[in-house]
Structure formats: C-alpha cells, structure tokens
Length: 114
Image 1 (cartoon, rainbow, N blue to C red):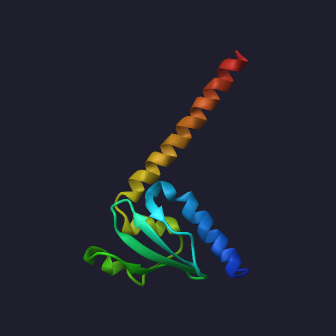
Image 2: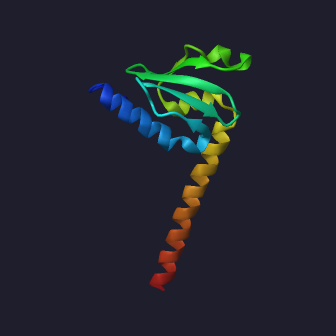
C-alpha cells in the first residue's frame, strides 16, 4: 500500500524501496521528481516513476526491454521480478544470507545458555 500523504512522502518511500532492493540492482539514481534511473543486473537501464498507482516503467533501454514501457506494478519487487531475470536469484540469495545470519546468531545464543 502506497503512502499518499504527499510528494515528499512518495519520494521518501521510493528512496527507501530502492535502498531495500539494491542487492538486485547494479546501480540506481536517487529519485528526482518521483523518477529514478535503474541499472539492472543484466546491464539494461530503465526509468521508473512512482505515483499513487504504483511503479511504472517510463523508459527502457534495449529492444528486448521495450515491451515493459508503460507497465505499472503495485510494488518495486514485482516490477523488478518481471523485468530482470536475475533479480529473483539475487533476492533469494539475500533472503538466504539474512536467514543464515539469524540462524547463526540463534546458535550462538543457544551455546551461551548451555
């Protein structure tokens, strides 16, 4: 659910989402007027806008990316999953790493109790 209290809130949400998804991006520019240029892991660049409808691919580089222009997604995760074949793999790796760190810290806590 998008926070719709104003453009500053949307921009803050956009930047927060980009930072949360940087594991699945080669690079991104900070949102300017609710638009950001993302470089996907595959090297393609897309411009994404955010409004109350969601995240929209405003522009895409490369002929194989052209079909995504104008498509809107409810979440940045769903957009990146659709346009970047390698994003899901990166997301799974990130999740596994976080779960492993949690398991390791839990194991450490169990050892200290004994």
